[in-house]
Amino acid sequence: MKFDNPHISGATPRMGNAVTRAIGSALMKMVGWKLRGKFPEEKQLIVIGAPHTSNWDFYLAMAAMLSVGLRFSWMMKKEAFVWPLGPLWKAMGGIPVDRSSKNDVTQQMVAYFESHDNVWIGLTPEGTRRKVAKLKKGYLRMAYASKVPIYIIGINAPTKEVVLDKVWDLTYDTDVDNRKIKAYFDKTFTGVRPENG
Image (tube, rainbow, N blue to C red; front, side, top):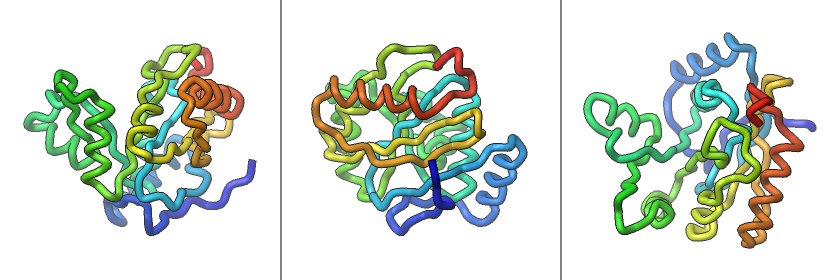
């Protein structure tokens, strides 16, 4: 698999500055990992990352994001957004989600996309760090309802790479899309703890 050097396009949500990029790059070098691939030319995306087999995945993703100045958003229960960490979560891209709301999480994300013209929302479709036979389908429901593309990012431990892969061609058949995406992750990437993947 051949990759170009990562670059940020004009459509990519941005955050940070030269200092935070230097910190992210230093962290990636320190652990011996690289960010490889190419960012898509999409202003709105649902970014799915897998295999999610270790707590290290989150730190790798955050360091990779910092190293290039990418801002991706992620969902967190609204109760976590209290002082003193609430403002930090929001600054890092956290989106408060009301799990008790009459509007389900999918509809909350549809509304979020409608009110933000340049946002990438990151999800781990397994929903756990344990081995799963199927991915949870929430990411597909959000993509279909929001009419937002899905972008694949893979963790590949043997090569120590966070891989910016591709926008996935959706069929809009939930079972077909979910099965094919899971099979693609299984075939293409190996997690930090492969026994969990």
